[in-house]
Image 1 (spheres, rainbow, N blue to C red):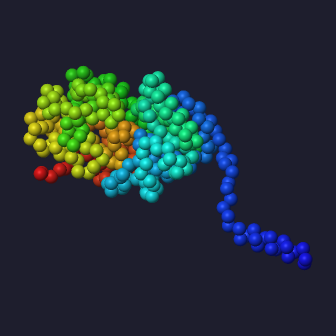
Image 2 (tube, rainbow, N blue to C red):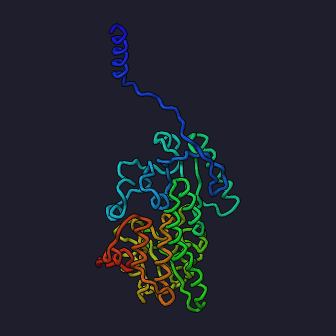
Image 3 (cartoon, rainbow, N blue to C red):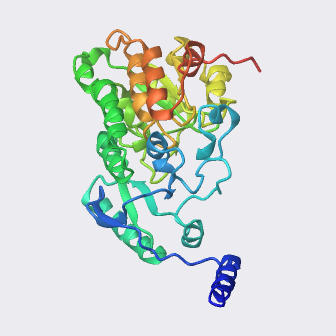
Length: 358
C-alpha cells in the first residue's frame, strides 16, 4: 500500500496537467515538380492551402474546404452555387502578404500564373522561391494557360490524392472543350463573326486579340475586332464609341463583372449612342454568364471550360449543335458540386437576360 500511494499522486498530477504539448513537425514530405519546373518538397497530406484569385476555380473543383483564405466577396446569387465551407469564416486575403500568410498556417501556397515563355517562367520562379524562403511554406505554381488545364488538374489531383476525380474532370474537358478547334476548322472564313468584347461601366473598354482576357473569342472561331494596345495585368483598354462604329462588329459580347445589375449590358442595349451599331440593330448583344465564377474572364480560370462551350454554341449554332442544358448541368455537378435543375440552367446560360427600361 505504501508504494501505491505515491503512484496514485503522480497519476493525479499528470491528469491535471493541461499544459499544451508542442508537437514535433514530423509530417512526411514528398517532392513534386510544379508547372514551372521547380522541385518542391510538400507535406504528403495537404489539408490547408493559401490560394490566389487565379486558382479559385481549380481549387474549388477538387476540394471546397482546402483554402484558408477567401479571394472574392461573393454576392448572394453567387453563393447559391458555392459550398459555405469555401468562403464562410475565412479572411479576405489576396496577393502574397507574407505576414498574413504565415498567420493562416497553410500547409502549402498554391498560385496560378502565366508561364507562356521563358521570361515569364523565370520571373514567376524567382517570385515563388522568394516567397517560399520568407514564409518557410512550400509554394506550388500552376499554369493558367487554357490548353494546360488538364495538366494543372492532374497535378492538383496528385497533391491532394484525388487522382480519380482529376481524371473525371479532365475527361469532360477533353470531350467538350478541347474538341472545339476541330469544329472551328470546318467553318468557312466568310462565316466567321467579328466580335467586340465590351468591358467597363459603359462598355467602352476592351481587350485586343492577344489578351488573355479575350482568349476564348479566337479559340471558339470568332474574330476579336479590337485593334488596341495590350495593357498589362488587368487589361481594359479604353476605346471611343467612334472606334467601335468604325469596327462595326457582327456581335457584341459583354462582361458586366460579377454584379447582378448588368450595368454594361444595360448601357449597350439602352443608351442612344449604341443603337446604330449593326450588332445592336440585329439583336446580337450578349451578356457573358458570371455565376458563380466568370465564364470567360475575371478571373480567366477553369470557368472558361464551360465558357468555351457556351460561346462556341452561341456564335456558331449551326456547327455546335449539342444541347447546352445537360452539358451545363454536368459541368456544374462535376466542377462545382451543384445539382442544377432545368429552369436554373436555362436562366444561367441565357445570353440575353431580361432588363427593364430606364
